[in-house]
Image (tube, rainbow, N blue to C red; front, top):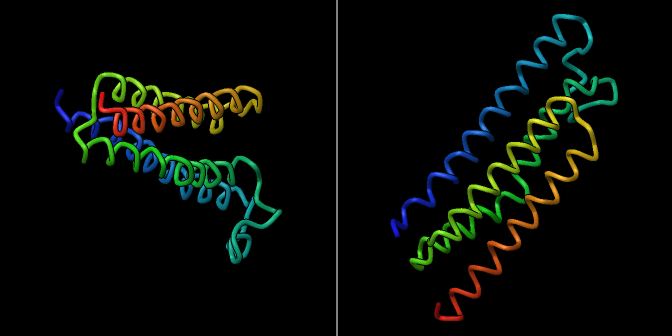
Length: 141
């Protein structure tokens, strides 16, 4: 198994993170042009005067910098110990797909129950990746 293959799902998640990051100023500038916000609304973060469609990309971006850190760590640990196998790659791509689905829901129709499903499923996959890593690392498989 090519150990470097783990970098592809990692790169895909990085790309998603940067795409969401780009949405933040785009939505803020558009809202500013429509007079919905002013610069001071962001002086200490986002004020309560910032409309949801403007603040959601920032919240989604923060989501992509929270638990995904554990994804990057487990991927790098698996790579460094030569433990990247088909299972790890499938789980990694599934995790990225579920995070992309979560972002699409959050930035789109934003149904809380749909978003919760994608978020919970992605966390289950991430937990499975960690269990698989420890089983392989200490189980000698």
